[in-house]
Structures are given as structure tokens and as C-alpha cells.
Amino acid sequence: MNYWRKPLDRDKVKPGDFEVHILKDRCKGCRFCIDFCPRQVLRDSDDLNTKGYRPAAADPAKQCINCGFCVIVCPEFAVSVAMRLEKEPNV
Amino acid sequence: MTIEIANTKVIDQYIRQDRMPHIWCPGCGIGTVLHALIRSLVKGGYDMDKVAMVSGIGCTARAAGYVKMDSFHTTHGRALPFATGLKLANPDLKVILFSGDGDLVSIGGNHFIHAARRNMDITVICVNNFNYGMTGGQMGPTTPTGARTSTSRSGNYEPSFSIPALAAASGAVYVARWTCLHLRQLENSISEALTRKGFSLVEAISPCPTVYGRLNKQPTGLDQMKYYQTASSVENGADPMKVGIELNGKITCGKFVDIERPSYLEMAGFDKETR
Ligand SMILES: Cc1ncc(C[n+]2csc(CCOP(=O)(O)OP(=O)(O)O)c2C)c(N)n1
Ligand code: SF4
Ligand SMILES: [Mg+2]
Image (tube, rainbow over all chains, first blue to last red):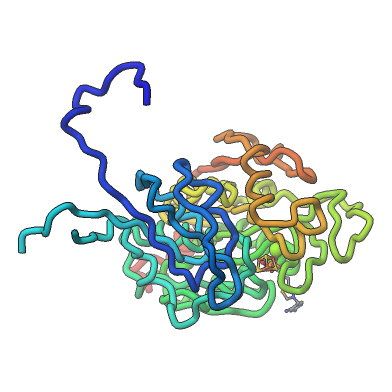
């Protein structure tokens, strides 16, 4: 990405590593999340779900930025976003 | 590598999981609007024991059965009288009305104008899909002129109601309109509406692909969302009398009215001392 002006703390701030979770059997395949994801993280899955709809699935190769739009646009309450942690948190 | 839920599905604590999946069609926007309402309630930190949701009859109205809070699914068009009674009997309750356009301004139109006139302390969320979804897509008072529906096969020849105009003219203190795509704004407007004293109304334009979109060249929910994306403009403070929606025409969104006026409970001296 080309910045017009480089953010001052660009080297210090590391964007989180996010992944999208979809409750496959709740999805009715409306494709709202697929079409409106700014990073094209979601796509149609290869299989149908138990109700016969083709649910959305996250493409592991694409990087989610946690904008959260898929979570709020989903009419089925089926999408959530999780953050991957690199190391075990201190217990 | 552990996974921490960043955007936890807080929502799952407020909807009745045992009743999911809900009855709404693929591509229908009602679930999206309900999601926005629940986020506003969560963000506002409301005690869910002090919130009650009332609805009439219709696809939208089914929402009352999906939330984990006190809710009542009343008869068609009579949600506002029920909500009025509920608020008067227990003024401490935050009463939210969640219903469709047909329920609120067609059969319930008379109750709507008088609740707004009285400035009854109720927050109304109206899901407008321009038709009677549940019963098979008949035309109603919000159906744009020219739209095809199951009871206007060659195009509706009646002029239509604009809900913000009706609410503002009848005396509502807060009036806003958003579509199912303006989700952050919708959430913020609902949050604001919940804090206002008196009659507040948020209209959410929603896809109904199954019975409305299909007959109007937008056969999927996604087609309708794309229409909102290209045809809507945000004009906060716009004159509510000038925000009518024509068939597949421009949709003006925004907050149109935000005024103060004594509410019904204030006028009636219904504060805690006198109760
Ligand atoms: C007294 C009465 N008249 C008519 C009906 C039939 N009816 C059920 S739902 C409905 C329309 C609902 O439309 P709307 O409120 O816009 O909700 P939507 O389904 O579009 O979400 C009608 C006319 C009824 N249930 N009761
Ligand atoms: S008929 Fe229309 S309003 Fe009713 S659930 Fe289906 S899409 Fe939604
Ligand atoms: Mg309707």
C-alpha cells in the first residue's frame, strides 16, 4: 500500500492476525458478507450445508482486518471474528 | 497457537439460540436490523430486565419471539396501543416497538399518528420493505407508485406514504432513516432514539427479495443491497417532507428530526414520586 504520508508509528504497530468464523449450518447463503468484505476474505464454500444452502467460507489465504462488517451485516447472526495469538497468554 | 475471540458473538447472549435459525428468508434484511438494535442495547448498557420489546404481526414482528428479553407479539396493527399500556403501567420499562411498515402505518396507522401526537415514550423501529411480506407481498401504503406486487400486477397506481414525513408531521421528537447497508449509522441512530424522551422513530429500509424484490427487478437480497449502495445519500437534517422514495429511486438517509417537546409521561405527571 502506498501512503501519502508514512504513519509515524508504522514500524511499531503490528496489525492483528484475524480470522473469520462462520456457523455453517446457520448460513442461508445470502452472500452479503462475501460481496461487502473490503478485503475479499469470504467466498462461497464448496459444499452445501445441512439445509441445502451454500454457506460462505473464509479464504485462509486472505488477511482479515477486523472491520467487523460481515459480523453486523449477517442477518443470521452466524459470523464472528477471532484473533490469532502468537504465543500462549500468561496464565 | 491460541485463538482469542476478538469480536465475540455478544449477540448470542441476547437472542434465543434454541429458536435459530429464524424464519426469515435468505437475503431478507430483518435479521440485520434486529442485530443493530441488539448492539445498541448492549452498547447502552441497559438492564435487560427493564427493557421490553413489543411487535405486531408480520415477518418483522416475529423478532419479538427471538430475543431474550420480555417481549410481546400482539395482534396486527395493535402493537402501539399495547406498548402504550405497558409503558403507562410500568413507566420504568424501556419500551421498544419493532414492527413492519404494514403493521405500523397501514392497519396501525391511526395508532401511529396518535402515539406520535401524544409523544408517548416509546422507541419505534420500523422495518420498511415496501410491502406485506408475510402474507405474500401485497401492496400497502408504503409501496412506491409503479411497483409491482402480488395485488398490483401491472404497477401500483396509488401515491405512497413516507414514514418519516408521517412521523414528523404527527409530532415525533426523533426521526431517522437508514438502510440495511448503513449499519453503523443505524446502530447509532437507534442508540440516540433510545435516549430520547417521547416518541422516537427509526425507519430501516430492508430487502424483501422473496415477494417484493422478485417482482421489481431485484430478485435477490444482494441486488436490493446494491441498489441501496448506489441510490442512497446521507442528508442529515433534510426536510422530512421531501424524503419520499420513488420506485427504484433515490433514498435519502439521515437524521431528520431531533427536537424536544414534553413527553406524555411528563405531561401526565407520571414521575416516580406520583406513581
Ligand atoms: C387483523 C389482521 N388483518 C390482517 C392480517 C394478515 N396479515 C398478517 S401479516 C400482514 C402484513 C404484514 O406486513 P408488514 O407489517 O409490512 O410486515 P412484513 O411481513 O413486511 O415484515 C397482514 C396483512 C392479520 N394477521 N390480522
Ligand atoms: S417474505 Fe420478505 S420480509 Fe418476509 S422473511 Fe421473506 S424476505 Fe423477509
Ligand atoms: Mg412490510
